[in-house]
Amino acid sequence: MKALLIDDEPDNVRLLALQLNRHCPQIELAGQFTDSTEGLRAIQTRRPALVFLDIEMPVMNGFQLLERVGEINFHLVFVTAYDQYAVRAFRFSALDYLLKPIDTVDLIAAVRRAENTARINPQQLELMRQYYPAGSGVKGQVSHGRIALPHASGMVFVDTKKIVYCKADSNYTRFHLENDEVYVVSKTLGDVQEVLELRDFVRVHRQYMVNLDHIQKLVKGEGTYLLLTNGVSIPVARQQKERLMERFGWV
Image (cartoon, rainbow, N blue to C red; front, side):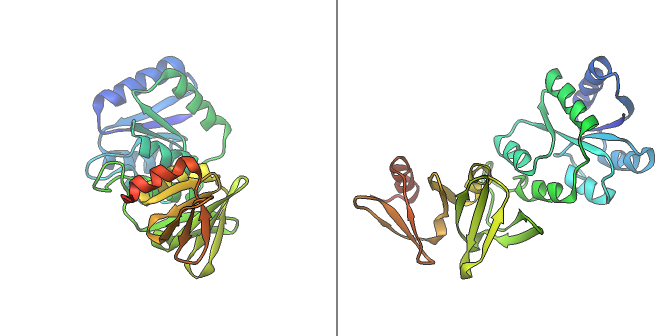
């Protein structure tokens, strides 16, 4: 497989090239670039089968580079420094990634996946772009805005402020929006939790995650529950009650 390495840190490029030469003999290195513009030009002219791409680069980041590429007809492995929020986005979009410093075992596995799996589809990349927290201003926090929800017939973009709550449905999650709109997404509530926790949502029960902006009232009694702005009552698990009260500053 002909591969390109694109990362603005020269030491990272040299180390990755050394690891590939030593441990992945099926890889033919067709170029190593620390300048994203040169990397883009190489993708367009050398037609690689595999690209190792850093996201956070000056002048043009990884997403901007891919936008200029247009149709992605190669395998793609993102290379990034460890960040738990970025990792959540990678997992949610099911895109392949390697964490710096790159572990040799992980590298070999990533190359094998590239050899044996289909290339990424535009939906995966769009999900990653939506959930990757770059440029959010505060580390680990993502502002409200539109998010992409993949569903059976494609992808829909919704304003997070309009999402009232999410409900687990086996290996799916139901997104309940204002005006009684419902979207079913083929992700578990655990997957959804990893990305929506950054957008003022909180898991209050094994089956439910709620938008804090849509909580009208907390009712305590034999069973604690939340009354939401759409009139729906959501149970609160005992172990989540204190966490919820701390988040709101309730007494």
